[in-house]
Image 1: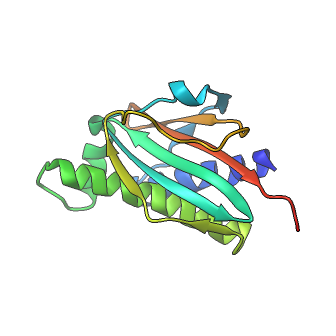
Image 2: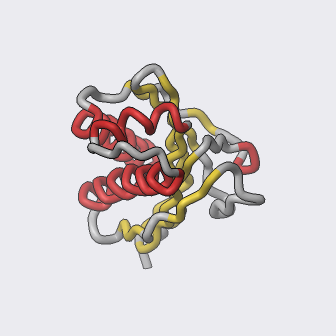
Length: 153
C-alpha cells in the first residue's frame, strides 16, 4: 500500500509544478528516514490524514524554490506569509489529488503552516517515514510522509 500512496503523492507534486511552474518537477527515489531527523526547509506545510488511512504528509521548500512560483502566480511582494501560504497550497493540492485517487477514506486536514523546524514533528507510531526529494528550478524541496492504511473493521 505504501508504494501506491507514494506514487500518488509523487505524481501530485510533479503535476503541481508542471501546471503552476510551467515544467514538471524531477522526483528522486524515496528513502526511509528517522522521524526525528526528517528534513525541514524555510517553509513547510503539514496535512493530517485520517479515515481509512492515518498519518501525515508535509511539503517543505527553501525560499529560493518558492520565489519563482510566487512570480508565476503574479505575486510581487516577498512577505513570509505569502511563502508560507504557497507551501500550504502546494501541500493541500498534493493531498487533495491523493484524496481523489485514493477515495473518501483518505480524509485530509487543513494545512498547518510551519516556518523553520518546530520543536517536534509528530508522526504516527509504527509507521515508516519516507522522504521524496523534488528538484525544480535548480532548487530542492521534499515531500515527507508517514501514512498507513487502517485495518478493515
